[in-house]
Image 1 (tube, rainbow, N blue to C red):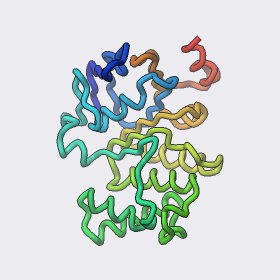
Image 2: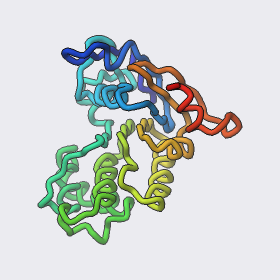
Image 3: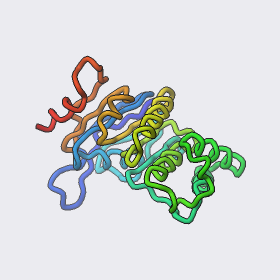
Length: 231
């Protein structure tokens, strides 16, 4: 399995520079941690990889399937930084609804919803309305919806925002497990999360990829190294 993005360029109207500027990626199975200052182009890149934004130029394909195709979307799971939900839905109803949109029948949808609610420790709150959830609970529900259908490509934008330290540890364990057989790309400002679980670290600056590699504990502190790139 491989995700190949070649020479991606994205510019917003009236912007002085490209949000993403000739960026290429070649990702295989594993967890990829994406770092970069605000405005580096991380979210724009991830939205292009999800097919939400169309690049001015460049190509994106998963195992040869173009990002614009139904086949690509069928293998994609995505958690945006601010994911949308229906506050009057219960957690169970929300996952059933999204499972149906993914093409699961009623039995499969219920089994998947139950599995994911348990996975993110929300089984006991399955019948509560989402508007009553805490911020951390909503974030866990967002992680659950991104995992519907066992996606082969999982893209997560600030997935640990709002999670307490114990929940972050559980999340890291979950993502490490998913990354053993799939491609996971996650962006976060919490450098220690990436240091703990990423097989490969990616650092963006001004729309470009300025560093990519395996992070070895013997290098130095990842946060210190990351901050050096922006001095």
